[in-house]
Image (cartoon, rainbow, N blue to C red):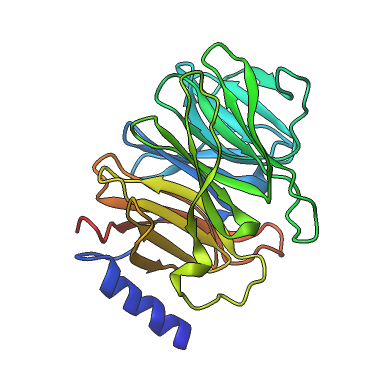
Length: 298
């Protein structure tokens, strides 16, 4: 009862004039939402498919057995899909037809578990390859860059589970969630799309919020609005942390799904799309995709 009351209060306090609206109340570990041209694309990882929602109905946009997709990003006039289970990227056209696949970078490094991606606005895509989701494991997470001409290079390594990635709107910085380190890193982007030295942009434990009780809670998907505010999905805590350009906490948005995987804003930044699961142990990991009004603009 306390959890339900807290969620209702969060809607009243943080979603302005409106309530959460269902996009898909019966989703399966939904991940990687992308709002593009009036359509919301999102992955259903255990179902090996990308879904598309046009405001009225959900349909299967793309699928491939064994893929386990976690992210989709605009690329080459179509899209690139990250296959978390299969350790590869799949390039598709705008209709969903598969065109090409990538399993390693230019130096022969094989991908293990690609996770999140973001187009850089210059024709390329940054993406994370996370490493092992284990606090006792070595930090082997990496970040790669897929160039417009199809060359992939590693641009960061040694991360303690690299997760969400986001290129800022000006193309000057790349934000990366180091999930198990409970921090968001900030890299300067160089002219050749490589990255400079990392700095810590946000330490979640420094925000003074109550712990979630889940030992592996940490930052997952990222989003940014026109004002430069960063929206951080906290997986395992079921909340979005909204901070300004200096990392100051502006809002905390509680959500019903504890395992909040990612977030997207609509084109006007008035609506927030959330993806996540209520259970990350019981297959096929039931979850939801919802739309809520943005508390910063409503």
